[in-house]
Image (cartoon, rainbow, N blue to C red; front, side, top):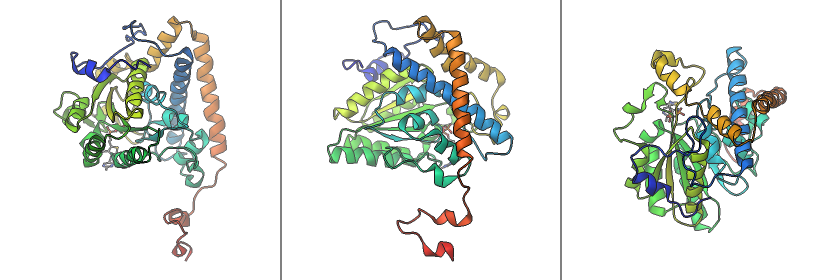
Length: 352
Ligand SMILES: Cc1ncc(C[n+]2csc(CCOP(=O)(O)OP(=O)(O)O)c2C)c(N)n1
């Protein structure tokens, strides 16, 4: 978008606060920065509302005993959607962590297939072969060396694709994170790494994860730029990621983006966050709700009104309900299915 701007440098020379383009009330703070097209904002809001509808439905299903476990995106929607809107799913690779549902959908994993995974219907959950994404990763940080591998292969083969990878603040304490970042820097691969700092790794707060002032500071040690952005600001996340994607695509190497946000809900449906965080802290974070902020912005720009947002919420719920009906028609796996797809040729011992 703004090819001339160097957000990492601007952030490094600033006061250390994450970059912001929208105030908490949706006001434009930096009129000199070009705004994204209206359609992109509309699509961003649609995906964020869809993400909320998925969170709502899957949490209810888990409470009804019909779904095993669910990890919501709640509170992190702008960080996930704003960054993913900066890449082209037809060209670029997505390497998710585990709670980037709207990014995985926009990349081309159909919603009914995603719900099939949550329902344990693994065969149906398969990512279509032409969708350039790795599966969601349960093992913290282990997707990152793969992300660097994909990006490195793009350099070697002189392809145009950029790899967009995600991880959480907790993942930055893993060896895989270090190894991946180091190699990405050495080989200058076309990688954009979005670290979603939602302040917690289950019950471990960020203060116990690192002594670094900001996770984005770590990038410098690997020899590439890092930038911290307000992860609840759809426009700022999109802007900073767009510039990082442009850098990567033009052969200038990786960028680390720390999207500073807050996990408003539980870690997953087996967690009870009231055991380790104060209600006042959560209430403060709720005031910074990323969906409310983009709605306020879109309203002041005349892109939506309250009735249109309400209609979109209902549409999102209906979309989830239809996809769920479909997902429930897919077969549930039997014990032998565990062995399928482990090897290129089916293991005969599976059926013995
Ligand atoms: C290698 C590994 N260690 C531990 C776990 C258990 N575990 C599951 S989620 C999680 C916290 C992850 O925190 P973070 O990376 O900040 O991502 P978030 O879940 O907050 O999105 C941990 C420790 C795991 N899944 N994998």
